[in-house]
Every structure is written in C-alpha cells, then in structure tokens.
Length: 79
Image (cartoon, rainbow, N blue to C red; front, side, top):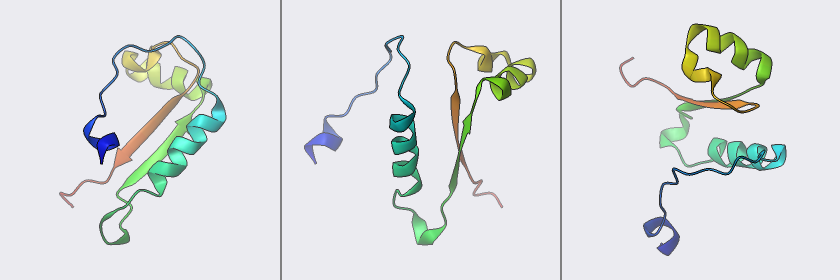
C-alpha cells in the first residue's frame, strides 16, 4: 500500500537509452494488469525509428528525441 500511496510522477528524465528488456517487462506487466471482465481495454504498440519518422510527418509531436515510441491505446467506452 505504501508503494501506491508514495508514488510520484517524474517530469525529469535521464538522456539514457532504456534497455529493451525493461520496456518488454513494462509492456508485459501492462498486458497482465487487472481488467474488467477480461475485456483487455488496451493495446500496446512498440514502434521503431522508421515508423516514428512516418508519424512525425503527420504529427510533429512524434519527432521528439528517442529511438522508439510505445503507444498505449484504450478502447472507447462510447461504442
């Protein structure tokens, strides 16, 4: 309980590459997170540099520094 209550959002990041295994572990944990009635209301996409360059042409926000981008997308409840 203390871990949940003491968590904080971090706004300052190190300019270091995150190991691929750390990213895989974080995605794996997200995929296995509890969800309502086995609905799995999210999708994770791990996008590499080539896809990120294509996205940057559509939206400049994706052109930020970094080698990859992980998108977490939730299903709409308006369906």
